[in-house]
Length: 368
View 1 (spheres, rainbow, N blue to C red):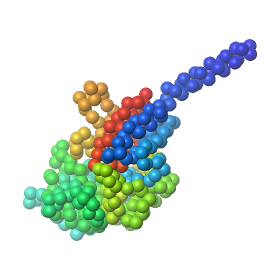
View 2 (cartoon, rainbow, N blue to C red; view 1 turned 90 degrees about the vertical axis):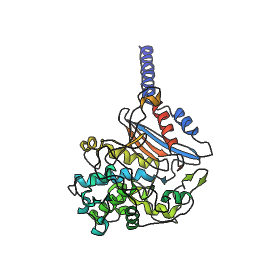
View 3 (cartoon, rainbow, N blue to C red; view 1 turned 135 degrees about the horizontal axis):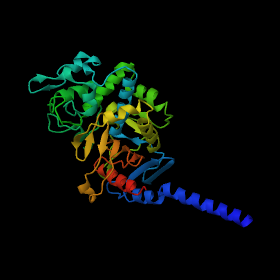
View 4 (cartoon, rainbow, N blue to C red; view 1 turned 45 degrees about the vertical axis):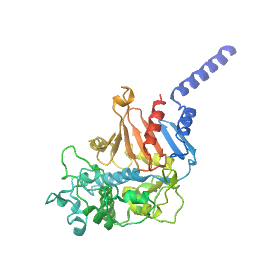
């Protein structure tokens, strides 16, 4: 009897271990994958948090540590989307509302003037979220001098700017198309600068204060904040090619289109809250999944991004869709519904952010 009992316990332990091994992450493989991203030529550090069900893993490689805050860049836009959808849930706005309802007349004046027609008063909240406004991108589109603001920063010409200046820069550029042109989208940081100002006007607070009060503090974030002080050296500096890019003045200016500092672990907390109905009803999510191509292979929905390679690029093996957002720095926050996997982190490289996608594909393929 005693032998039978011991045998039974042994059998149950073996079975429990076996079951656990089927769902447990292969963390050594995860670490190997992120280690291989480091080449000390363009990628000097990476950090990654992966979650699926009750399983969670955070790892880093190179000169980044798991606890180090970093610039999440345009992943910030997903936080702005959360705020807009919360305002919708609270009855403070509709995605069909004209933005002129929330912005000053001097901002709206000839904001979108295309082929002799003023479309400014037709622009909606949805147009801004989905990048279907046709507005030029004050940051990456070229100005009158033939250079973009991004190019100037890459050349080491750090500078700051105000919201009003972003609007003026945008007005001096030519819009790409009329709002709501079928199957047209143009990724534009101007859209999210405008959304940030709308949020500020509704809450009567700065975007940094709103982020803190509505997102960071309720989620218990300790290391996440909107970068606002150019002498703040807390976040690790981003790399451009093989050198760090000291653009602290610029980072104070991005605000709603790219100014958040966070860690992979705290970004993960936000990401799961976003998709699990913390800020707005989960029933809103399908409404966001109306996709337009913005830059292959990225597509944009309503305030949300999708990455999915066609089967021809993956040896005709269907690749699941990554839904969330990424940033110019190689920062990312993605959910994969097909596998119920969440991913957050960065490769911290402005010149080669695509490295993060190669890494993520390998990570996801290693998860059963």
